Image (cartoon, rainbow, N blue to C red):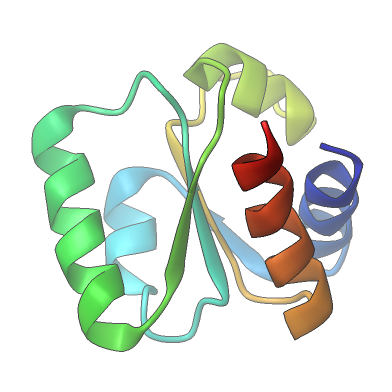
Length: 102
């Protein structure tokens, strides 16, 4: 989870992220990683997955709710999904492999 927090915080600090389903759907192409919370609407999730698959962007399922993801992003509101536009390939693969280890 440490790598995920670091990548999210760095992306937010550098303003290299989009949050919210509509914003993320528009910016899938330039993203390196899309993080979805458990509380995302299944219909939106499918749209995101389809778009991510067609552009080879990894989707990471965050184990918490949109409230927890919002807190992780230092925002006072819920975030169901966030697209990260920064982060190295090593960081992205570390996040994905952390998920598989659990």
